[in-house]
Image 1: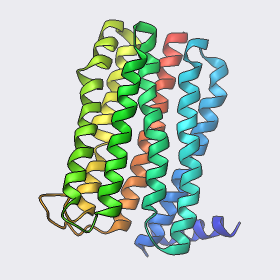
Image 2 (image 1 turned 45 degrees about the vertical axis):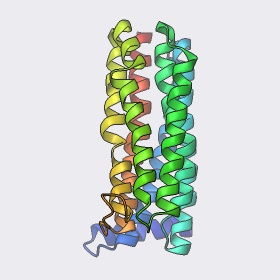
Image 3 (image 1 turned 180 degrees about the horizontal axis):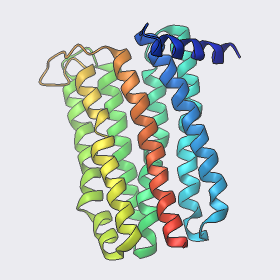
Amino acid sequence: MNALLLDISNAAAIFGGEFDLNQAVAFTFFVGSMAMMGATAFFWLEMRNISAKWRTSLLVSGLITFIAAVHYYYMRDYFVASGESPTFFRYVDWLLTVPLMCVEFYLITKKVGGKIGTMWKLIFASVVMLVTGYIGEAIYGAEVQSWIWGLISGIAYFYIVYLVWAGEIAQLAKNAGGAVLSANKALAWFVLVGWAIYPVGYILGTQGGLFGMDMGVDAGFMDVVYNIGDAVNKIGFGLVIYALAVSDSE
């Protein structure tokens, strides 16, 4: 109850003109958590209204938002208690949810010949992207060496982009056509544009992120960007899957 009153107070301060970055960070953590929990309920309740072959995809969509909702609620408490950006816990969340988002590409294409090996390529690339990103940001974030880890993370990210835009996933979706092709294009845009906030945030937040330069961006500002971006990306992924399932079921 006290946490809810605190978030209401934060919202009143933000929209009442007395903007405070710390209040905005805490408030977006809370709103993100509630939005993703609501999305989880929606995805799982709608599973009974779609064709059986798409229920696993929608189950995974709800699992992604559920994991994120729990992490966001915990991250909000950590931030309020410590005043520090919850970098470690954010990466734990990403390490669980991003590979699941990659699994979605396999689930929507396996009906048209998608191979389990392609799924593991996506998962492996996402894990490399996140682990090297964490090392560069949390361990070497204040040192010039962070650009090396950022480069490795970026290569893994662009490999995922290649697979979903021009590689095996893209070809399978093209062969399938129809709703599968439309869904893959929408998800691919999320990867290219929506996920781009993460390497950009890395560049802005680490000393060696851009040719060894310190961009000097406030961590709280990036928390707000990440919170909004995460909610849009994770819920958006699920809504694309839901639209595909509904379209195919009809």
